[in-house]
Image (cartoon, rainbow, N blue to C red):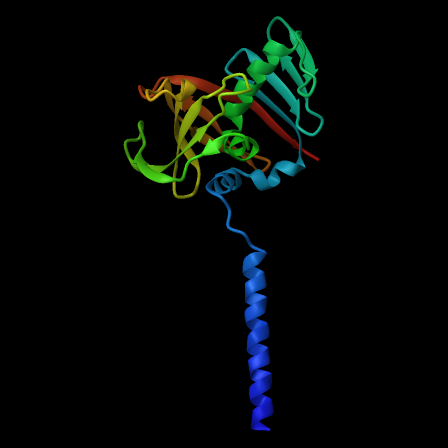
Length: 215
């Protein structure tokens, strides 16, 4: 009888261990890029049917990420096109869209831009705040895209919220631009920093008229 109980106990323990192993396997650890994206609402992205935003004062965008349809409205013109079929009439508009969308959704670009390389995180002094933050560097390939070879040093806090970045054109050792990410707002679950200022406190980019439409 005691032998039977011992065997049953061992079987139960073995089953329990296997269940724990399965649980560990089914929950892979997130990358830093995924953690940053999720901290900004990436888990809600699949529900988004349209985003409107104004970059600076001149460009108003309406974008349907599911159909890839984009409309650019300026003071003098309106251009509608599909990002999957860019031609000579929409080339410049698409260049501007890629740039403006990058500012709007850089936390998500870390996940979307699979051809880029992302460094291991380190602790470093943020250039504007002068405090210690976490830093990763995303470097783009020298081939393809509108600005090949560019690099961004991204500084984020313990909550994986982006606070500052350094832009280095062509992965040069010297910075071409340093700015903050401020005034983080929640738009239907998508968190966007609407204000960006230089080291001297002067504004560089303002994102406004943001509307996130869900399905």
